[in-house]
Amino acid sequence: MNIGEVADRSGIPPKTIRYYEDIGLIRPQRSDNGYRAFRETDLHKLAFLGRARALGFSIEDCRVLLSLYEDETRESAQVKAIAEEHLSAIDDKIAQLREMRETLSHLVDACHGDHRPDCPILGELAGATE
Image (cartoon, rainbow, N blue to C red):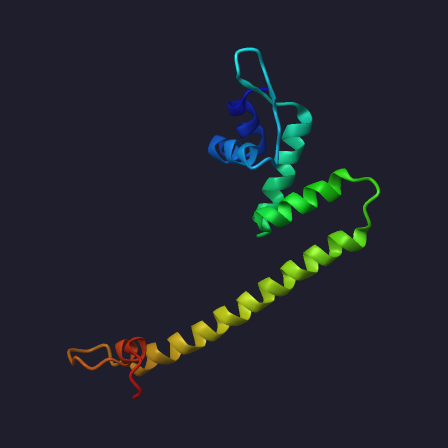
């Protein structure tokens, strides 16, 4: 398969596929004229990477997960540890977003939004205490 076909089938843009090749996540064969020749295994790896990235795993996590996927002697505990660490990071981010939302909601409620120049939102952003 050429890069266009594998991009269509995997749902991953050609630019991303080239990037994954550049960083060694996939290694398509090359024909005599230098064109990439993707195999079904490459397509499968790209689909794997696409799903992992959609779940927010980092490139390095994807590299480790892909190597574990290919290692038939792996222990599922290794995979679970990576997923648990990522889940914890997601939970932390959700907590931060909730806190941000609460603060911003309070500021929006405190702002009159009228013709007057005073605004608690700008005051907070400037570090002023009101």
